[in-house]
Length: 109
Length: 144
Image 1 (cartoon, rainbow over the protein chains, first blue to last red):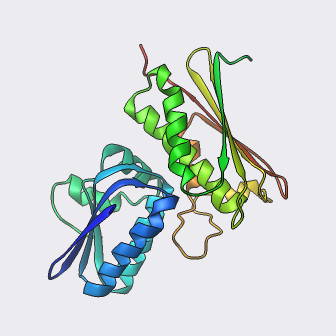
Image 2 (cartoon, helix red, strand yellow; image 1 turned 180 degrees about the horizontal axis):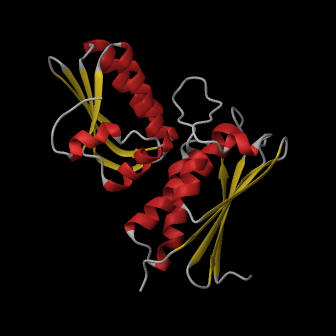
């Protein structure tokens, strides 16, 4: 499984691993959305700590989940993104979701 | 200009080949001793171009994607990614950041922006009904 999901009272955390491209984004999306629709969390945390590669399909994945969480009046945060993945995220201006982590505090967009 | 080394690759436009394509290109240029960031930039740009051919060029059908990598004196890498798919009628529009034909909201529309900013040069040629060719260039500077 390229994604492991933890569900607790308020939070769904998706620990994504491996490569995120167009080929495997759909599978990740389905699993994460299933967890969101199961738990209706206040916060979705996408943990990129074990992601080794990401192209713009990963941005689509984050933006799609951002919209979904927004519709549920929830929040989304990105954690542990490696340097190369932050570089791709910066292209889309979604580093806002990261900046809190870089300041070593938790804040959500 | 004659390359000092080159490689050609053809494969079917199946999404499972996206990972193969970017890894194959990365392996071929690894003799130039690129650093982690350069390698990652090239893999990302190749992945974007190949995904465009598969998703937009050939859409529901299966065609052939052609990759030609040339290495020139001075560690200059030139990667040409070509398909014989539907082509792009308005390249200027296709290259605008955030422009996408995807209606599900799951594609960011950043493919060309990433290719442009992660590589030194990006050139696109396309003819509707004939296909699209993308040339990516980057000089590997980390060595020495």
